[in-house]
Image (cartoon, rainbow, N blue to C red; front, side):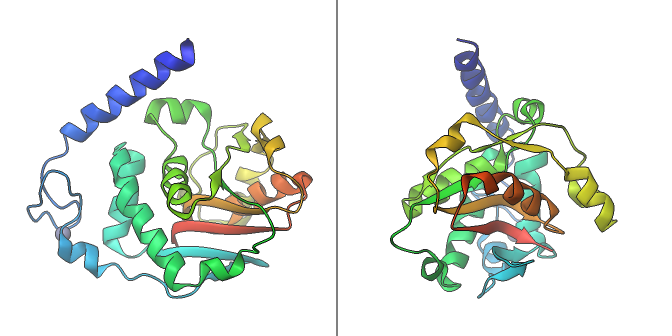
Length: 229
Ligand SMILES: [Zn+2]
C-alpha cells in the first residue's frame, strides 16, 4: 500500500516537473517545441564515441565526454532538476554509441545477459522521484531486449563522487556502500552483467559495485554510462 502510494505520488510529481520546463533548449536557449529539451543543432553537436574505453581490466561503454555541454546539461537536469524525461534522449545517445562501438560483439550468445543499474540511496530516490540510472536501464533494456535487474542496494548515503577531486578519498567514499538485493538471486552464475550509471568519473563507484556483484559469479561485468570524464 505504502509503495503503491509512493509510486502514484512520484508519477504525479514527474508530470508537474515536466509542465514547468519552458520551451527553450537547455543548452543554448533557442526555442524548441515543448516536448524537446535540446534543439536539433545542440543534439547534432554531441560527439558520440566510436569505441569503448577501459576502467582497469573492464570495458566501459561511455557514450560521450563530460566536457560536451549539451549532454552534460541533459544529465544535470535529469539528476538535479528531476526532469526524468531527459532519460529518453540520453538513452538514445547511449544506444547510438553501443551500435557504432560494436557492443553486441562483446555479448556471448550462450550466456544470459542482465543490466544492473547503479542504485542511489533510498532517500535520494524518494526525494528525486526516480533513480536516473534505472530510467536509462529500462529504456536500454527494452530496446536491446535485455532484462533489467535491480540487483544492488545502496547501503549508505555518500556525497557525489564528482565533487571529490582526490582519487583515494573517492575510493574511500564509496567503500562498502553497496549490498546485493533480494533480486540478485535471479542472476545465475556465468551471466554477463552490464552495470549502468549515468556518469563515470574515476570509475571507483563502478569498481565497488562490480566487487559487490562478485558472489554471483558472473562470467564478465561490462560498464556502461552516458558520459565519462
Ligand atoms: Zn540548443
